[in-house]
Amino acid sequence: MLPGSPLHVFKRFGWAVQEIFETDPVADAELKIKHANQELSELKQLIDERGFADVNPNTINASMNRFEGRLNNVNNTAEALQERKESDPDGVDAFLNNLTDKQFKYQKVLESIETDVIKEKEDNPDANSGIEDVFVNISETKD
Image 1 (cartoon, one colour):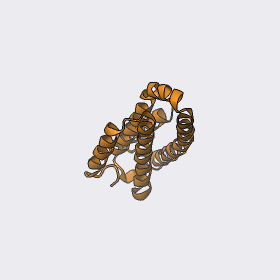
Image 2: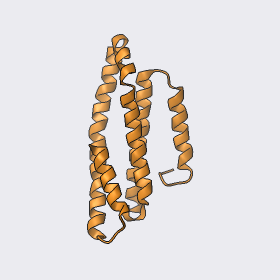
Image 3: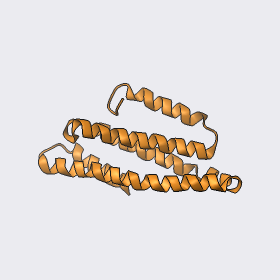
Image 4: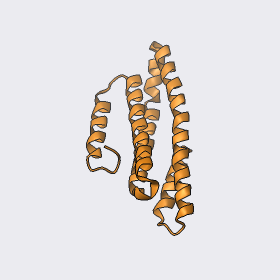
C-alpha cells in the first residue's frame, strides 16, 4: 500500500499504535525513524512507478508533512534520550550514529524527488501551482 491509496491510512494507524506502546525512548525513536523512512521510501516508490505527473501533489505534500512530523517527534524525544544516555551510553550513541546515516540518505532521496519536480516543471511549464507547492515543501523538508 503506497501513499494515496485509501488503505494506506490503516498502515499509518498501525504505525501510530506501535509508537504509542513503545516505552523505551531509544526504541521509540528508532521506530519513529523506521516509519519516517518507510513513508519517504513509499513516496519515492510511488513517484518512480507512476511518474511524477501522475501523482496527486496533495499526496506528495501529505507524505512529506508526515515524514517531517515523524522526524520532529524524534527530536522531541531528545530529553528522554539524554536521560537514557547516562545509563546506556553505547545504545544512545549507536542510535545517534544510525540517525546521522539516515539523514544523509534522506537528503539523497529528497534531492531525487526534487529533481523529478524540476523536470516536471520544465516539461510542463503550464502545469498547476500544485507542483510549485510540492517543490517548496520538499525544499523546506530538506532544510
